[in-house]
Image (cartoon, rainbow, N blue to C red):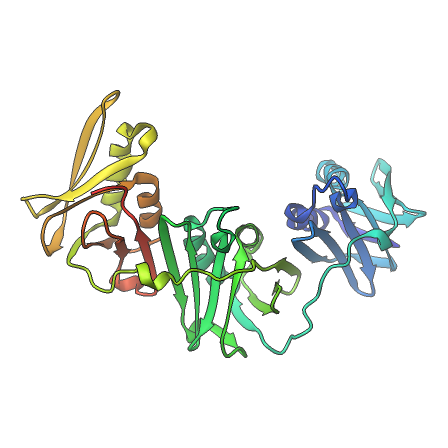
Length: 368
C-alpha cells in the first residue's frame, strides 16, 4: 500500500473514528485502526465490537493495500506534523510515514487479525433523513437518557417508525422526552419498525454528524447502520422492550401556566444556588394566580424565591423538582413561551409549546 494524503483530511478521518477505538485488554488489536486503500477509496475503520465507524477520506492511491496500527500513535504523529502533505506506505507490517523533514516507522499488525465489521444485508428497507434534522431530534432526546445496568432497555434512544412518522423517545425513569418527525421531514421504504439505539451510539452521531447532507438508516434485528457519503456508523441494538411510555403522559391537564421560557430558566438557575446536594426546588402558584413562584431553601445556605408572571388556566398548585431535570426540559425548546401543565404535586408534569407540538417533555416531581 502506498498513498499520498493531505494532513487535514487524514486528521479528520482519525478524529471521526477515535471514539470507536476499543480498550479490551483481552483483544489489544481493538486499540488499532484499520487503514485500507482500495481502488479509489481510502478507508479508516475502528471498532470496539459494539460500535464500529468507517470514514472515507480523499487522497492519491499509488498502490492498494491495508494495515492496522495503534490509533493513539498514528493520531499523535498526524496531529503534530507541520507538513500538509503526507505519504503513507505499508512494508512488512510496518507503516512508513514521510513528510517534509520527517519520517517514521510505526509497527503494525496483520490486517487479517482485525475484527470483521458486521454488515446489514437488507438494504431495501431504509429511512432517509437530513443530518441536521436527525441531529436536532437526538439532541433534544438524549438529555433524558442515562446508562443503567439494571434497566438496559432505557439505556438508549427508542426509535419507532409508524404511520409515516419517526418518533424518538428517551427516559431515565424520572423524566421523558419525545420528538416526532413527520413524513415531510424524511423518506422511507419501511412500513413499521422499532429499535433501541444505545446512548453511546446516539452521542457519537451527535459528535460526528456536522455536514449538511442526507443520512440513510438501515437495520436488522440486531444492529443498525447510519450512512452518509463518507461515513458509516454501525452499532448493536439494545435487546429488550422499551416501556409503554404513553401510560405516564397525562391525557389531560387541570392546570396550565403559560410563561416566558427564558425568564423561567433564569429563575431556576438563580434559585438553585440554595439547592445544595438535594437539587430540589419548589414551583408553585398560590393565591396570587398571576405569578409562578420558584422557591429554594437550605438550612445551611438560606432561602430565595423568584416570581415569574404567568397566564393561568386552572387553579393553584405546588410541586418540587430536581432543578437540573427541570432546566433540561426548558432548554430543548426554542419558543419564547412554554406551557407548564400540572395536575397535582405528585403526578407527572408536562412542559410543552403549541408551536412545537411535535415535542414533549414529561417530568416526575420529587414531592408535593
